[in-house]
Image 1 (cartoon, rainbow, N blue to C red):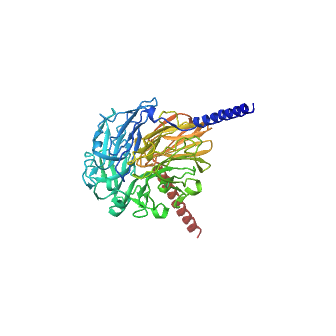
Image 2: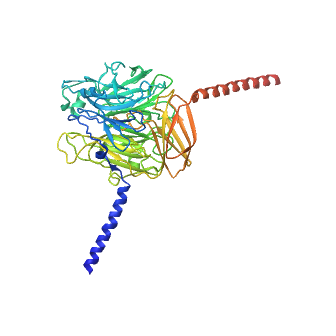
Image 3: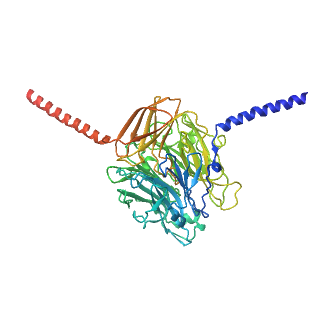
Length: 567
């Protein structure tokens, strides 16, 4: 009898435990890699890196697709079927020339403003076994509107920019409506096969490289204006990200550098638009980080109206909190709970749980060939402090993580996640393949905002979207790439709304100075905002200021005239 009671108790406890586990499982991310049709791993030689991915709608059907670089293997172009599955349409797409190169990073924008997103892919070398590096060129492909692409690298003036390139980023730094490019370069020159590249050979080579700042001239050609704009630095560049850190409605530039403690640190450049110049403000802002900077996540994690930056690194990452106008950034990683030991690459801010603040995903992976498994991080934001819940939410995959992106794969209103994993060189205890995680944790309401630029960039790259709901102000920047590691997130702005039942206003600050406001917006929808022909704010302010000054001058002379009459 007693034994039966014990057995019953155990069974009941197991039953309730299973219920609890089921509840947890229902609130976790779900690995849907295999049923979705994603079959990919990034493969490179010993000592190299990479693994970029971009999110874009290749055929304008309303479902976002994926381009994933594969290093020495064939890249992937995954068409979203709209039913939770993807189809690889790389063969026959016109992108096959990438097979001749070791691909790295990828970004997408409508280069010629024809209504279709194009692709720019960075490479580090060719696959022909030659010994002198660099010998590769980065590749530009125009979308033909039928899910095929045309190689226009030479036609757009990029054929002579031989490089060992890592992270690309689109932005509109001169606010002319055409997406420009920043390309991070790693080596000026390296002699030997890729297999001998490792920490010692990289640093001893002493061949830090200048990056490229490529100005888009009316959608017809790119011109390297790197030095013309005052960007004279060299470094082991992992790319950069265009972002408005000082809230002046133009795109500044954050540059990530490897071996910052041995060679050249990170840079932060302030855009002096309309002057054709970037000002180096790295030291005065405290952003001259002497670390192995692999990538950056951009977001206003504390909703104070200023963009913050989470910089990935070997050992300890840094959360650089923006203190406001002309004040230096402060590293809050240790204080806020994101100071975990790892080798990190990709990072993504998103409101994964729809509670009106930004959570943080971080992809981790050791360096080949000595790869020790390390799980990814998921930091849940709770009142501007973070709690690591990767294991609890089933997103701590132990593959060799590299680039990562967020997008709404199934158009259900929440942010899903793809993580590029690298194939190990030596034996590895678990599979290391690229993973697609469906978001099953979001509970609150939401809003997505898609921009359609007329004078501004076609998809609003470089612009900023602000919503006001339930007394809260939440900001998102439209991602032009360079975010995470060599990757680009969705260009559709996503907002978690919690229990809010209406959005009081949506404010778009277009690159170039225009501002547009939409009021009383319904929740749980994707809102498309087409740029209006309202004059730029700065222009209107100019006339206000001029009128004010004229009135002051008139008042001054009237006052003087009255005083003279009294005398």
